Length: 302
Image (cartoon, rainbow, N blue to C red; front, side, top):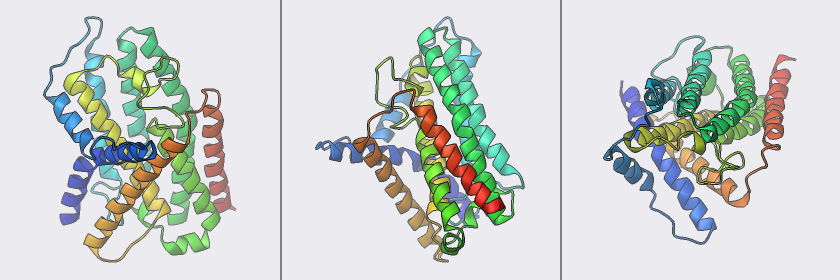
């Protein structure tokens, strides 16, 4: 019961801090002090205290978009084990539900953008869906490979099965999976080199353009859901890349949180040393990630 409470508290309160760490890391590379680590929390509080403006051309779809996106992401957070602790919700085949919860969230985000009637937001929605079609196979191949290793279809078993010994036995497959999952993490969360969450250039915007018409609490919900998605997919990556377990529950929680912060720093470093890819190059990198995860699966099936 204690682990479930800690899981829920961490999943609800920790995600915005990752964005703060990424921003602070990028500021350090640019020679600036940067915003405080807790700036994302301040921004969310400010947005939730504002009013919301809805265009007369929008319908209930536009209003439901942020709520469905957040709800789907929250359920996904309950399916993922944090550190070496089992997830609060677990059943055989939950990996399929996990993948399609993000599909549901993406669907409502894109149709909410289309509901505004803006060709600009339609452009961003088209790009988002196109790249999603290329990145989803990577996630499925990775989950299938891990399911094969653990001989289970439950995410709690799949993601807690890996140990340092797994790396010794199947190091090549694990290395390929880590590379594929890291690319997936950046692509799914619209980070550089796939998208720049801070850009306002019309020709390069993808996710940002789809939420331009949201304001106040609705926009706050979207930002929080984005941070939560980064946290959830980051937890998947950490469970595979660094399967560290001490046997002490509190120590394992502390290690998990520290590693998540290190992951945020690594994302900040990538965004500081790389430029955004040209749009024609993004599908090539996503297909490359799919090939990495497919090779990992083939190594396990042979």
